[in-house]
Image: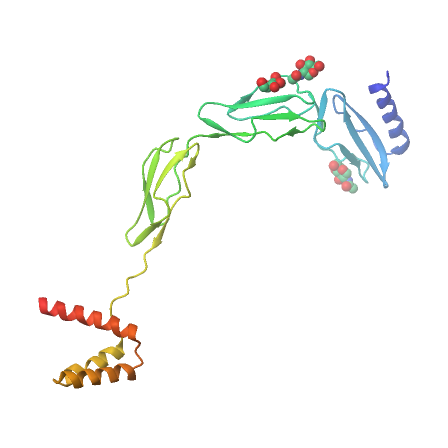
Length: 257
Ligand SMILES: *[C@@H]1O[C@H](CO)[C@@H](O)[C@H](O)[C@H]1NC(C)=O
Ligand SMILES: *[C@@H]1O[C@H](CO)[C@@H](O)[C@H](O)[C@H]1NC(C)=O
Ligand SMILES: *[C@@H]1O[C@H](CO)[C@@H](O)[C@H](O)[C@H]1NC(C)=O
């Protein structure tokens, strides 16, 4: 019962004397004890923090071939778990944290909490669930879409902006967006090139077939000739219908002039 720290120190000291004669003493770390042992031909120094402290950094070190400890910053810190942190927020703990302590988090005004509102210090010195983050409720200016722009100069929570596209581009997505707790209400829209309207040119075959009407005054034989040429040119009924519509429009336009 009285053993505790003292035994460990003695035990550690004995081990370092026998197993690692050639290695210097492990670098001292405040509020800890160290044990030196040989593991698979390597001399290993391991730190243990005293009660009420938790280890931060590497637990074990190797004494390498040049008989030096490959150092790295190890500390024993007060409290069973690392001190909680929350930027732009606060929690109900000030002093050292004990195992199984529960802390609750709150964000400052204008910030919204993302994650768990509480966390508990576990036996293994870690916190669970992980700490949350406090995110600004404001959005900040969004990225301008390629070939587009937005109207609106306020990006704070509740503000609305509207996206537009340049000439010859059309908007894909939701043009109006509202900033809701740091995020725009939906995925930002994009501008897409409008495909060139195809110019209404009747197929060549049709033009040739249509000459039938110029070559003869007699309607019936002209029609017969026309249909023959249509078939000969391999025009489909769809193409024929389309071409006739165009022709009709052309004739109407001529009559109106
Ligand atoms: C041993 O570790 C020390 C300290 O990190 C370093 O300076 C030295 O080069 C190392 N020697 C070998 C053989 O790795
Ligand atoms: C941790 O435990 C110690 C001793 O029981 C106590 O004095 C201290 O207030 C506790 N710390 C917290 C954060 O509750
Ligand atoms: C923080 O507040 C919660 C809820 O009120 C409570 O359960 C917890 O014990 C408090 N933690 C500390 C370290 O005071």
